[in-house]
Amino acid sequence: MKLVDDQNGYDSSYIIINGNGKYPDLLILKRICKLYNGRDKIIIFPRTPMKRFSGLSALRNIRLFLDSGYRNLIFIADREHIKRDANAEIKSHLIGIRILGETPLQEAFLLKCRLGNRDFNLFCNISGLTNCIEEELLKLVELQLNIQINLPPIRRDGNWRSQLKAEIDKHANRKQIKRILNQAGRSKLERAFPNLCAIFNQIDENYEI
Image 1 (cartoon, rainbow, N blue to C red):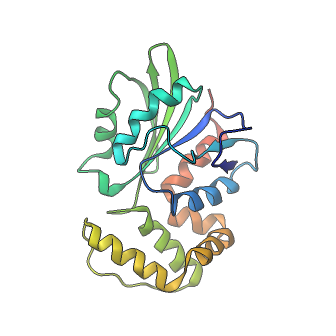
Image 2: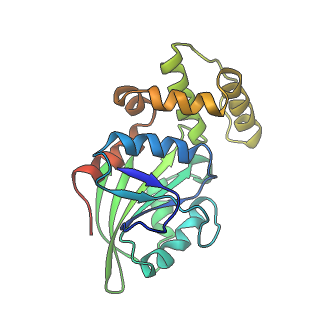
Image 3: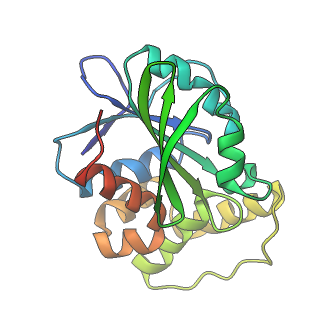
C-alpha cells in the first residue's frame, strides 16, 4: 500500500478520517502502509481536511467523503477523546447511518455501514493505551533503540501528554523518528501499533467496495 497526502492524480476508494493532528500520524501510517501489499492500493491522507474537526467530531466528514466517491474510510483518533467505550461512542456519532455488521481487529474494529443507498466500510482505531498515539510511538522507540524510558504516572491530561512528547524528543527528533520508523521491521511495528497494523493487514487481505 502507498499513503499519499494529495488526492490529485490518484484513483482510490480509501481515505483517512483523522481526528488527530498530522504529526506523528502521517509518518507512522506511511511506514505501516509500506509493509502491506507494496503499492497495489492507494490510501489518501488528506493534506487539508474538507472540514477540520478533531476527535470523534471528525466523523462528521463521512457524508462529504461518500459524496466524493470514497467507500473505505479509516477513522483514527487519540484515546483522550474517548470517555468510556470507544465502540459505543463512535456509533453514537454515526447519525442516520445503519450498521450492517462488525468485525473486531485486535482492539480496532470494522463497521460495515449503509447511508441511504450507499454501502461503505468504516475502519476504526483509537490510538494510545490511555491518552495518545505518542504512547505507541514511544514503545517503538524503546524497542528499536533497546532502551527503557520511565514516565510519570499516567494521567489523561494535556500536561502528561506534553511530558510524553518531551521524553520522546530527548531520544529522537523528528528526523530520527522517521529513521526509526523506516528501520523498524514488521514484528516491532506490530508490537508498537497492534491495532493500526491489524486494520491495514485486513485491508491488504480483503475489503474494498
